[in-house]
Image (cartoon, rainbow, N blue to C red; front, side):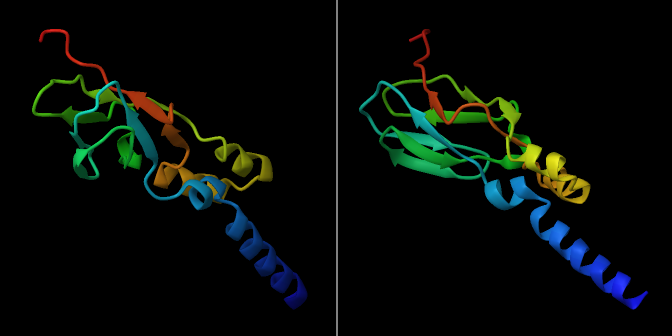
Length: 131
């Protein structure tokens, strides 16, 4: 019986260590690149941070827990830009948890929202047409 419990404990540790693939691989804040047809410095405002006076293209961090519908504001002294609105898609690392049978790891990925990521790596800004 002791040998069985020892083997079960080792198996549980192994499963737990590899069972949240998306959280391990894609953990932290997702990054996207903002690009556009402008040479002027802009200020980029995300839910995570403000990036003042940067030249495009520029890579920023976004909030992992509110990817779908998250707005990123772009401001400049000379022009007005439409907000970038993020959309999400399923993180392919999530399928590793399902295939390995790691329901605990998949649950961790759900809690940390590592099952989702921005649908595109690069978003292009547009000037407002009302100017």
